[in-house]
Image (cartoon, rainbow, N blue to C red):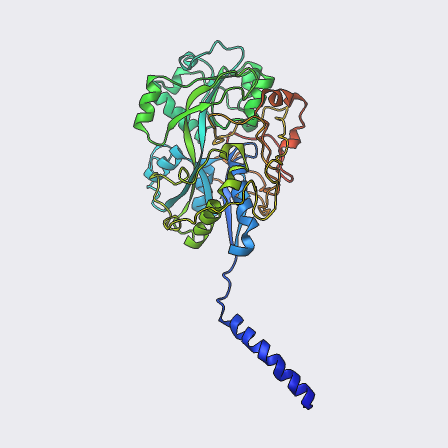
Length: 439
């Protein structure tokens, strides 16, 4: 070897060998982890909530290695079925449904208690909402007895919560004229065509479907209150008081009292602690951004998001979360998405009777004009798994690339629904068709 070449090689080794030794001493990066969140139908609140979680996780996936996708489903019961089969790793579930699953009661009667179900976080409220048609003479809860009332689709969270109300009132299903089974996307259209006097939904406010029904069909929100409701709340801790804010819909000039469940984020005990800890740390550190991604999330605090005792806490949630460090008035740390004050205009409700979704939540009051940014960093996935053991109407292709944008919570936005394009409310690539009674 020439002296010049040997000298160059020796000089290079002085720098290359220490660098190579340092790199070899570093632990190998863990393999990427992939999680899917079971949510609800596209025009509810569960779906954009899952999309908000995935958005924040995916914006930092290069750092922690966790990749997140969103699954549109028909709600709480379908999510638990998919979770049990391993089709999804995280699920959004109503608090009363979670209680029944853990204890083998209600719709899970005769089944063993689910001892591998674990709580992660408690999210927004979801109010039981009573809608009355414009032609009915219903003004109070007591007035619905003997009327044509839709109690919710069979095996749905709507039905579970409304039946709890009936039990508290001392009523039976036979006290009502139950409507004929409608097509899944048209469950509440009877409020518009005079074949239904009232209907129960677990719904969020402002809600796209309710905006359509109150604007196009003049449906009315009826309070759910009284001594029987007080006793119900005292007996079952997974229910709590709620109030639907005034002026969210046409003709709704005052607040409406009712009661609510909460949206619970759950997983199997087998979900690795590192993945749960990553989700916890990202949401804690970026809580301010998370609460700005949908109006239903605006009042959440980290303390209030701590899961209760409905199910055992997942071990990945047990150690202390880091203290949030947030840039002032910044929506996203990475710069992806809209910045503070750059919210997109909400889409009006579709002209068809978009059914309010089981599990869509409520807030006491919503700021006028609050809307959801339209873009999500959640990775696209394939078709939703078939859920054969529970009704799966409302399952759709997972399309988290564009989070659905709710209507603006103002009467004018709801009234404008007659001119809306039905396709405008679906994220790109979403399955065609009307939505179903689901979260």
